[in-house]
Length: 326
Image 1 (spheres, rainbow, N blue to C red):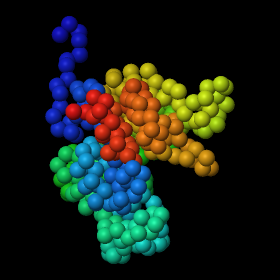
Image 2 (cartoon, one colour):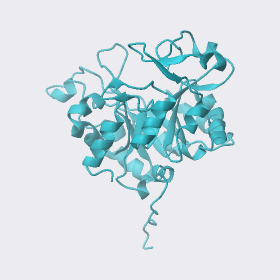
Image 3 (spheres, rainbow, N blue to C red):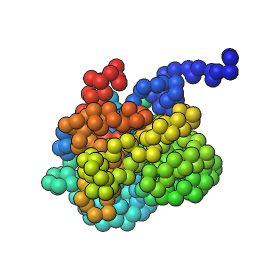
Image 4 (cartoon, rainbow, N blue to C red):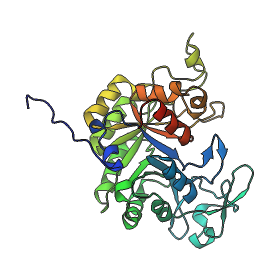
C-alpha cells in the first residue's frame, strides 16, 4: 500500500454518504429548518409539522431539522417553543398539557393566526413522515437526558439509521456526559455537537472529536454586529470575512482527518435584536436570496458540507445550477 491510507469506498444510501464525507467528496447536504414551511419567505405550512416534513422530502432535502418538547404525560411532541402561544390556537406551557389536549389544537400561522388543518405532531408521527431515505436532526430542547427516549422512539418507528440529534451543550465538559448517556442507550445515536466559535474554538472542536467521535459538528459563527473592524466594510456590517476559527484551514484539516462534516446554519438573525448573536457571521439565507455565491458559495469554499436553511427550494436549485448536485 506504500504507506497510503486505503481508499474509502463510495457509499450508496443517503445515511451512509452523510456519515462518510471523505468517501463522498464534494457532496453538500441540505437541511430544512423546522421543515420546508416557507416559500420565498412566506409561511405556507405550519413549522415543525408533518406537512412541512413531507414537503421537505418531496423537494429533495437530505435532512429535516425538528425540535422536541415533552407533554405532561411524557409524550415527545414536535415544537420549537416551550409554550403553545406562537404556533398554535392555544396558550400555556407544552409541559403542562397532555398529549390528548394537544391533539385537539390546530397549528396556526405565527403572524396572521390563520389556522391550519395540521395538529402538533408526536415525534413518532414526524419520524414516520421521513420516508425511507431523508435524515432527521432532532434538536434537544429539554436537555441531553432525553437522548435515550428519542432513540427509542426512532427505533420503534424504524428510522434509527436516519436519526441525528444535536444540542448546544454550553460547556465542553458536558461532552463526557453525552458520551456516558449514549453508552447506556440501547439504540443507535448519532450526536451532533453544536460548537460556538467565540466560546469553543478549535480546542472545543478537538475535544468534541476526541470524546464523542461525531460524524458532523454544527459550527456557529458568532460574529457581532458593529464591532470595531477598522476600515473593512464587511466586518463593520457584521459579516465574517474568513468564516472564523471553526471554518479555518485548521478546522478543515481536523474535519478531513476525522471524516467529519462541518454544518453551517444559515438562519437569519436580526443583529439589532438585543441578546441575539449571528449564527453564520452575517452570511445568511436573507443575503443568500440576492447574493447566493456570497453565502452558499462562501460556506462551501470554507468547508461546509451541510447547510441548514429556511429556504431549501432556493438552495437546492442553486446547488444544482452551480454543479454541486446532479
